[in-house]
Image (tube, rainbow, N blue to C red; front, side, top):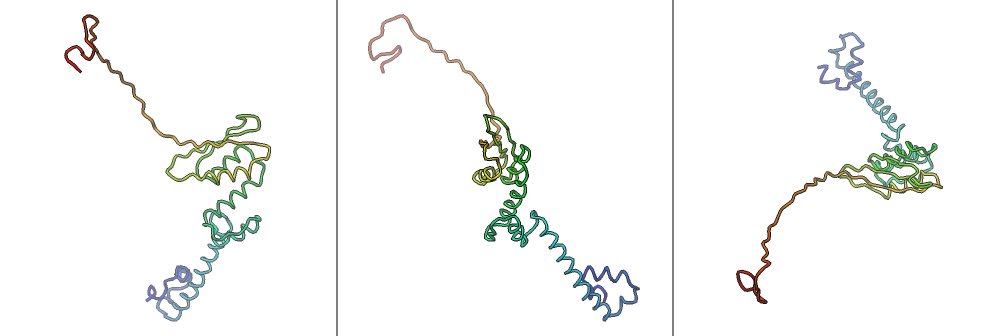
Length: 194
């Protein structure tokens, strides 16, 4: 009877705190079940609120993150794109170092990035190690770099996609016998007519 009435995880936990005489009382089991359902919903609500505190796990709370950071609220965009935009904005608030730029570009592109500094005066190069079949959105990467980099610096993008290439060498020898002596008529070849 207890297992039929009490299905809430919190109600079962509460029943563990009291004497087992309530295990056969239908009225008390129903009260424990009702209280347990309320506590389960409360725990679910607390868990959901906790998820909204971080942009990596937020869903309906992304609106508040965008408002806090001064970004335009666009709920028609996919959640992952909104999260990526918020995280990129949050990580671009501090001074931009080589490591920081690598992290920002990696988060925006979804692939590993390496920044090489001083390839020319006031210029750096960003290598994107694109080793998957996924589409690499270079326009987004370019926008992120433009928003993040100091204004006086220029940059180059390089997408590195490692491909295995096999190279083999072989040689052949052809032997052609040429007759250097004799008389040949035009339109004839040794051994027959063309």
